[in-house]
Amino acid sequence: MTPEHPAGAHCSRPVLLRPEDREAMYLRVTLHQSTGLPVLCVEGFDQDPAKDPNPLALLALSTRQAAITVHVLRRLLRLTTRDAVVPRLYPPKSRASNDGRWRR
Image 1 (cartoon, one colour):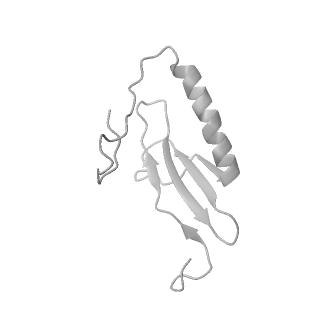
Image 2: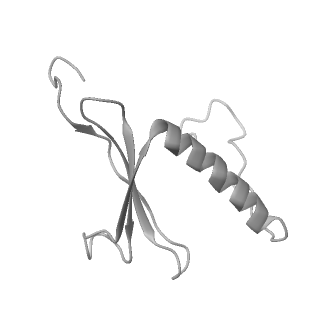
């Protein structure tokens, strides 16, 4: 909130996660805040939201619920990928890297 944009509902730019296979969903993640604490909203789509903007599912998480969900997902991911070969992501070689992207 700023003097130019006083109280009211605010929303981050959405991040769209595309599925790597046909069994996963498209996920659109945004951060919302109105008068209280911020809420993480996750919408699930059967196909690209540009083709069908109606989500199949909507999940609204408090920041505490989102932190717990991240922890649970990490633990489940470790269990499911324990025996699988999964590419690891490494941080950029240099801290001076402007783009900050991760490399394989």
